[in-house]
Length: 508
Image (cartoon, rainbow, N blue to C red):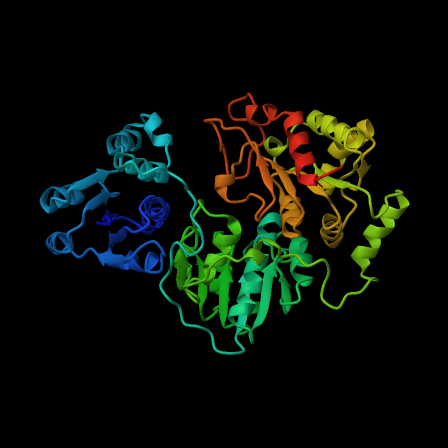
């Protein structure tokens, strides 16, 4: 007889969404099992389309819940809520096999009310959920949360020819990771006019996309600075769009769209201005950022799933451009001047980052470049922004690597990336440029981790990192190591990175 499993999770939307990996592991262990999940009625849409859940039961009180449990004759009950209500449900329902996750509620209360720390509080809620499966002998094969594992209440679908605005006014990496969303918007609403609101520094990313009809610049540090600049921009947007989606979670972005009086606005539930949106979508750190952004379409397309092409989203050059394309011509000219032919093994290297703790030591990049130039016979090109010039100049002086740092436009960087055998980088914006062009990308992570969702997205990429209890120490890194030892970067050896680079480059 196959297992009939009931999962109880009666708390918030975020807690409900995080249960998705539990169902994957149950199905992997018992493929024929039937999974029912009991949640509060308002959170039922979150699991309504989960491919591993056969039934979502709304919790409408203790007596009704107990009756449903007894009627269905479950063989297994997994309590992922663990409070007094679910305790009594377990006791009175007499389900033969019951398991409960360890909530560590006392440790949490002692920390909140008395400031007493506890090692128990460092463990993620998802880890606690999965640990509860051990009593049934269910091995943990995955911790992944993916697009399609959760849903959202529906929103009205715009009429044909609708005017859509996507707001993404964050940094380079964030803008790049929003590109797949722009293409999916046009796929979902083929007759729409799609505009992107972005910073001047990232405008070229969207201008080169043939499916984006308009780019609107939000000059947050200039023309649109402060409350008066915000008000001026908001007034210029009024009456121009039917639907707005915000991939940026800041209060400013939410306030801007609200002040613009756009008729329908969709944003993330974790936005500081979530209350200013008509519909919010759950934001999960357990997903790749590309898929988090695509989740903004869940209210319009509840069955949206990730696709292979979502990881290869930067075209080599705009449609219709020929050999005279200025970025391609500029890159080709510089390579020719350096004596680099089409058969050369080009390796891109980005040693910089806006945050010092996200930079692998310069001395390590020097030794790596020397080995790539000498042992692998590669040509190494250093890239980065103007702020990386001093760092790159020191590396180039000691290695003979070509230094293009601060000397390429964004379109030129995109063009160059497509010619590389491998791109070696810290956790940074150029990392996403290379990955989006399909270039094997080797990323070195220190204070940040893959679990934050900003790793190089797609097949063939690698992340080198060290498992330390102090990681991650922040979302974006910091000016100095909070622990003072910087082991997250210092423990990553040059030989380890060199060997990975060789494997990713293929036969020499």
